[in-house]
Image 1 (tube, rainbow, N blue to C red):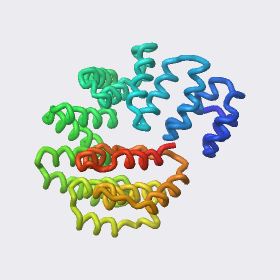
Image 2: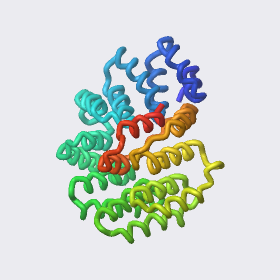
Image 3: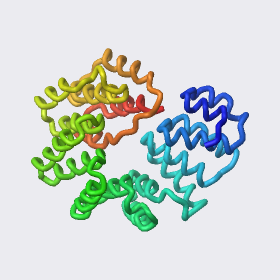
Image 4: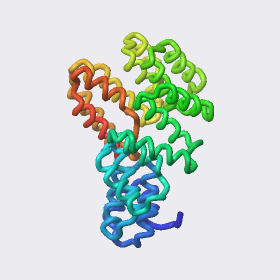
Length: 299
């Protein structure tokens, strides 16, 4: 990347200053910073830059960039609209894997299958993100044998790929294999004891499985006060889900404390909340409040 003032502000997380002065910079510089912010998970700020860029010039890359950002903040309808524009302008561009994912999120399963296959043929066949999301797609598309095969393929390529571990364990759970599922999650704790992702996944897994006593024991064992700030926020969010939203309750003080703490974030936290979303819906919980709280994790 070239050295420029706008990029320096992005690296220093001075996001409002970027918005204020970006018209003073050439499109190539703004593009560079928009792409940098997207890669750094600062999605809402990146979207502001892509909107500005699209006002100046409509390109496939700008539509793809903002489309991916919309997907990362869970606005799958707008993500699809922008990605469709990106691929209509440049049908053979890169990113078929993410396009497939967004099609899936919009329940366009036949189209998603075609684009996943296209991505696998065009070089994403060893990409862990693509393979693991394709496994999850196959699971949701009622193809358990293939899903099982792809989950195992991902974990053969990288046994430390934590999202795939969680998704494979939940796949086994949904297939009635509760003991292998739990064993997989516990093995991850043993194999990767310092990983905050593994710890968070296990805490979430205990909520999903309604393992009350083990949840309390494991929560108490976490070194919360010395943990990274994003880890603390997610523990707070999971615990509020567990103690309040899941039981049809609320706690104004807890919510205010979470909001105040989340306001200190400098980078977005993007996470798969699919299972908790579904549990809350199934229990007639306050899904709108849950999604409002999740939105505090996004910049």
